[in-house]
Image (cartoon, rainbow, N blue to C red; front, side, top):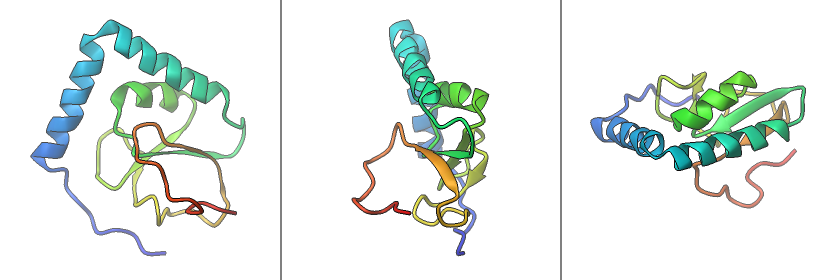
Length: 115
């Protein structure tokens, strides 16, 4: 297994994360939508096994997902993460993840995740 070299968040990356967090929290209806969306996802996950959220940089959804023991992961080292890794080279054995959550990400390539 090849892990990525340690990366540091750039000012732009942290600035974007903080800006998005502010936008969501400053608009109560938007924050409510994100929370309800994350709660709905959480309720529909398999109840046992490992659950990983890819690109887990949204602080609002991370709060909800962390209550359900969803591991946050991103290629950049943000404080909301359980670990840092590339989604195409996750540090898990093949087919060992029960749920994979991707809320604020680009769509994965067809066939990228198969067991």
